[in-house]
Length: 544
Ligand code: G6P
Ligand code: ZN
Image (cartoon, rainbow, N blue to C red):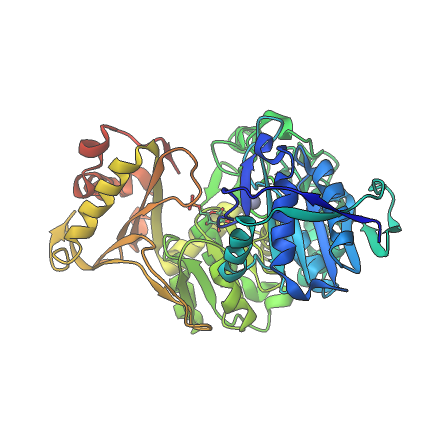
C-alpha cells in the first residue's frame, strides 16, 4: 500500500471533552496536530480493519482540509470504506442517522457545535460509535492516553478526493462513497412524521413559518425538507447557505444570538412559527408569534402530544431529562404512567437509556431535544415535531403552550449565567453552598420549606456506572428548585450556572412574567450562595 509513516510528536492537550476535541482553528493547523488525534483515535479502535467509517462535518473553516487528511489516514489504517457527505458535509444528527442506517463501525464528525467559526474561530472533531452516539468515556480516555505517547502516524500519499461528485472513488484499496448529505436524514424524518399533514399546513395559504439556519449546516437540510419536500414558501428558510465562518455569527439558537429570527418573530404580523438550529444542527429553539417556548417546556409538550406523531403513536417508553432541565416533563410522564429519568448534563448520558429501550424522548434545558430515532440531539427533528403538532391541532403555538400549563401547571424557569469568573471564586462559592447542604432541609427560605439539598450524582441503570458532583440541588416543598452548577463547556475561567424553577397551578398566575414570578427565588439564589459578595458581580452575564 502506498501509505507512509510520518514521524510526529505527542501533544499534551488532546483530551476530548463532552463533545470531542474542540480547539481554536490555529491549534488544529499546527503540523501533525489533527493527524495525531486521528491516529490516536484509530489506534484506540483495534477492530477497525475492514470496517466502514462515516465522515462529515458542519462545513466550518478547515472542514475541507481536515476531511482530505482523514480520508487518507483512514485508507492507511485499514478501513475498507468511508461514507462521506458531499462537500464533506453532514450535520451531527445526519451523521448519527447515516452511521445507524449503513451499520457503520462508527463515524468522525467535524464540528465545534455552536462555537463561532472562521480562521480565528473554533474547530472540533469527535468519534461516534456504531450506535450513532458519542463515544463513551472509556474510548475517549483511551484516545487521550494514546495521544500522549504517539510519535508517528500513517497516511496514504494519494491525491485529494473530489468531494463534489456523488458516487464511488478509491484511495488505494479503500472505497470512498460520496453521498448526498441530506437524503438519508430526510427519509428518516419522513418515516417519523406525518409529512402530508405538515405539507397541508404549510401550503394552506395562511400559515407562515420562518427557519433560521444561522449560515450553518442546517441550511441544506431545511431547504430540502421544509421548502422542497413539504412545500413551504421559498424564503421560509433564512441564512440557509452554510458559510465557513457562519457569516461571522455565533450559531447558537437562543434569544440572544438568533437575532434575525427573534426580531421577526416578535414584530407586528410575526409569522405563526419560528425556529432555529445551531452550527452542527443538533440544537433547536422554538418560537410562536411573539412567544418563546423554553426548551424545558418544549420537551414536556412534545411528550404530551407524542400520540399525534405517527412514529410515537404506540406510546413512549419513558422520558429523560438532564437534572437542571425543569420538571415540566415529569408531570407529563406521571400522567402517562411512564418512567421519568433524571440524568447529569450532557447528551451522552441518554445513550444507554435509549439503547436499552428505557426512554423514547430526551431533552435538556440547553436547547437540545431528541428521541430514539438516532443517538444525538436533533434540531430539525424538533422543528418537524412541532409542525406535526401544529398541523394536527390547528392551534397557535401560544395556545398549545398555555393549554398545556392549564392542564399540567407551569414550571416557571430561568437560568442565570455568570461567565468568566475566576476559578478560585467559583470553587469558593460552590464549596460554600456544598458545606451548607446538610443543614438546609427543613429550613424555610423564600416562603418555602426546603425538602432536600444534595450534590447530584447518578447511577446509570444500564451499566451501573456512577457519576458524582453533577450540581448542587436544593428542592422545596412546593416543587421549586434552585440549582448551582459549573459549566463543563466554558473556556475562560469558570461559568457559574444558576437554574431557578418554581411550580404554579393557579390559573390567574399562569401567564405571569417568569422573572417576576421567580423574583423571590432569584434573590435567594444570590444570598444563599453569596454570589455578589464573592464575585463582586451584581448581575449575571446572561439571563435565559
Ligand atoms: C453541550 C452538550 C449538551 C449539554 C451542554 C451543557 O452542548 O452537547 O448535551 O447540555 O453542553 O453545557 P454546559 O456549559 O452547561 O456544561
Ligand atoms: Zn451543536
